[in-house]
Image (cartoon, rainbow, N blue to C red):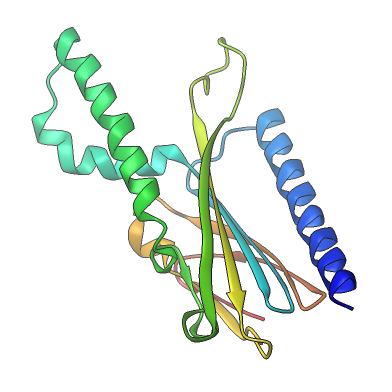
Length: 193
């Protein structure tokens, strides 16, 4: 029975990864979309997997708001500013381990334990001549172990409070075998499951 559940969870996680890969491919083939994030949740039994994707430009915008008045145009200082920006983005991604900055659900907060957090940066395009060359997406992956009776009722998108330029979060979920999709906007930052 345990093998069957693990096999099913692995299959669901693989499907979620395939969905994520397809989205990434469409982003590579299409326009780099600023102001749009993706949230994917797969819940099966005790396992809850969450993937949150966002353009690193959002993190850069937060950095620039704090550093705008201190910017100097000199070349040697520009290199230092670039290194500082990369360091700041890395620190910001590490801080996003606190998932409540991006999303929350009362059931996750009370019935789940975060067991793994991982993030990666992915180039949006590979061609040097593309206007979006050098742009990257941050992919944040959260793994939770939850109580047996976990039933998610709603997800609150807190990222709208973190990022002023965030216009929409595209949500895809596979919750207990039921698929849910929604486009979430700042005026209504909650998706009912």
